[in-house]
Amino acid sequence: DGGITQSPKYLFRKEGQNVTLSCEQNLNHDAMYWYRQDPGQGLRLIYYSQIVNDFQKGDIAEGYSVSREKKESFPLTVTSAQKNPTAFYLCASSTGSDPGVYEQYFGPGTRLTVT
Amino acid sequence: LAKTTQPISMDSYEGQEVNITCSHNNIATNDYITWYQQFPSQGPRFIIQGYKTKVTNEVASLFIPADRKSSTLSLPRVSLSDTAVYYCLVGAYSARQLTFGSGTQLTVLP
Image 1: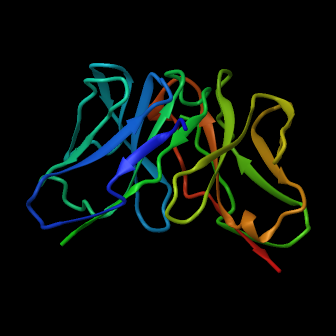
Image 2 (image 1 turned 30 degrees about the horizontal axis):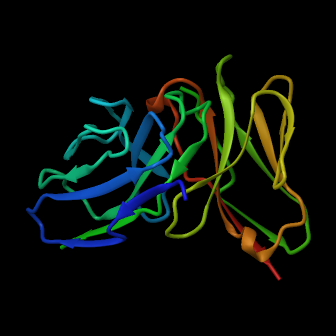
């Protein structure tokens, strides 16, 4: 089955530790995205990548880093510099690089809790 | 940057038609209008997309007036399983300009 996988579903970390969230897609999509969602809120864009080896900051990139070495993979690292990392993280992909035109396919999400 | 405004919440009963309106007064010429559905602790799911007039698929209809300053998502004969948050997005070519607002919490009652 084609789709997006995120792992793990739940992740717990101590403050001050970096943590990497996995996102893999087998849809052959060029564009990939990372969003953050806080309780009762909408999604906020962290980073996006329109092509391998290229990515751009979204609205809330501070304290996060990404890489796009392979078309299928777009891991997100939450660094210790992120002041409020506890949130629900969603990865998405789309066929084209115009997200308002092409449907975004979302993964199941990773719920990160930092204490 | 096209900002969208939706009602925070709506209630309906099973079997009724539900219409959720989104206001986007400063929509640009190239912008499309897209609606997503999100269940708790899941990623959003695409419902429907349109540019003008009316679009219909197997789950919903999207009505867009000529001035395109608003759009209405219509869900026919809702069921309990349609209880979710519905997001209206307006944008085209830039991921940074495509924003998910807080959405509309639709609650379907028995």
